[in-house]
View (tube, one colour):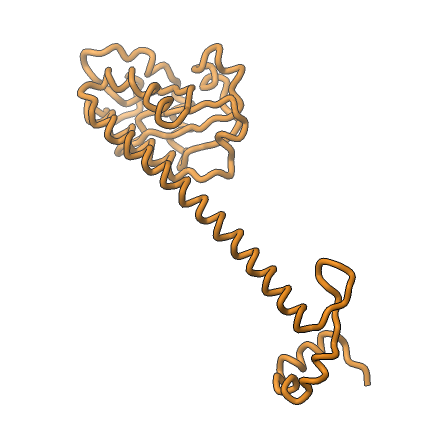
Length: 226
């Protein structure tokens, strides 16, 4: 009677006492080296397998440490951002200073902001409310920050002459009890904002910006442009 490889493997798993009864047989079994053509004892093959698994675990550990260090850096930047936003005493100061904060803290050189359903007396907001109802509707349906290479022509046009050189973007909805605007980040690097990237910190950035705006303005209850 012939047995297949799967049947032999199952038998050995179900009868571990076989290795006690035939220990001398194991010493005489040679198998191929996983990284070369030479034959090695089965015991040495097991050691090689364990070493390979150890290398894989070490690589995963190094990757986790790297991600942890990167998250620590971003968390520190978010902390500094929150402190900087608390220092503003007027919405106009915030609107003028947001670009420099994101450039200095996060190395994002291209930033555009548009608002709607927002009213604040005593400042010039015409630049920040030049959007149409279609943009309002699409951003209202954007549940998470978007990252990738695509923007509508109108939104891309907000960047002026720089738009032709930008390769990736992030659109971050600004919300309080309702959607009040859109923060758009642009980069010349195609992989700075890519579709598969995590958006947790981008959402937190949107939360911080939205809360700062609401501190110094009145949020209207409808979707009319200001």
